[in-house]
Image 1 (cartoon, rainbow, N blue to C red):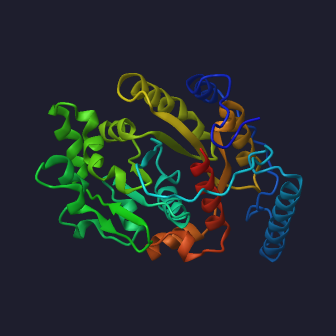
Image 2 (cartoon, rainbow, N blue to C red):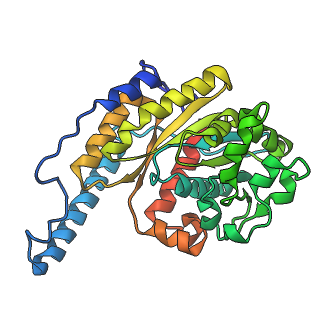
Image 3 (cartoon, helix red, strand yellow):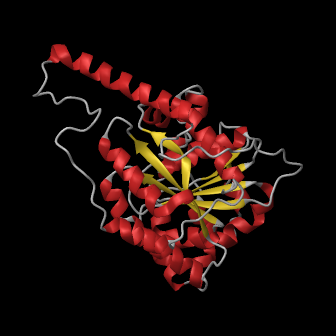
Length: 343
């Protein structure tokens, strides 16, 4: 029986588990359970009825799982204790949100997990370590209007991290912003001594001021991502419930193991977060089953479903926990925060 503080690990290594996913075969029947009918198959007058029935079936299955104690991962839900009260803040646990595949929910998860952790009375620093600056935009900050970003802290010794930190609209959450300037850092750092430890050096002065530092990595396995992994205590891997996402996990796990061996022995996989899950489709369910089979208890019980609420929050420039606090997405990220604290 695993405990929340020390989640059980699968018998096989993460690397071998990920490698097995590369050869995974996902069933593709002609009609998926719960799929919405195609436009050519069903007249418009019947589409709404079919969609309503599919939604009703999904809700019924969710109620059945809840009553049986089985979560969306197909496993019994583990009991997660209430987050303990803190007597003081710090030192922070650094977590890298990492996946070289784009569009899997890294930035969305960084913002909303950070906000949910803050609701648990944790002080959180969000680090935008992607030149696209999506994390900054998602918090209502326009990257092109910034005079100083994480790039200046990395490349200019005269600039301190406290000079660049910005408060966000979320109490207890601060931001180290980024913009396109950061793309130059990957080239300029090549000639630097100890280039892989640059982010760790940047974070060191404020590590005792926070309880969690969440680093939003760029969708690649370049030098910036290696910097994030070198500075991190753990990695959260957002994984879209889609077949092509599985095939990239092996390369990511291989990179994590190399960093662990050569640069950061304390680095570990905190958890794998299933995102963009659609409980109506057989494909999402089978991808979920493959991931749980390969990684076991490393996979979080919390699953992030597809919802139109997340694009809305990006436009609003705030997390879903404040934009739609009673939505399923907000409840999911609050549950994820409890799991992260327990681990």
